[in-house]
Length: 78
Image 1 (cartoon, one colour):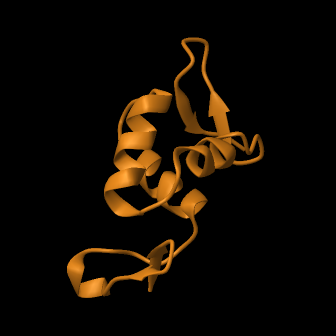
Image 2 (cartoon, rainbow, N blue to C red):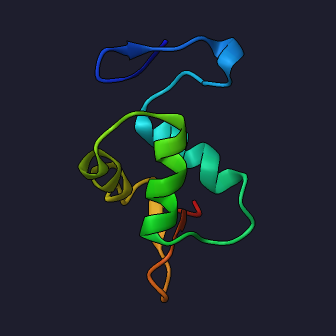
């Protein structure tokens, strides 16, 4: 599977399929609290090789992610 910028990895190495937004969703589902922008960037960078701007662009998707009063990100409640 493609993990970023022409670099491929195997599932056996611990990588999962999906887009950057799917990686962010998975990270936020597995954490109990909301995460800061820097925490999200750090955790996504461990799983994918993408630019910081790509992560930030995906975080701006208001249909999926929400920012709480302290500026931390969480999954939007439907």
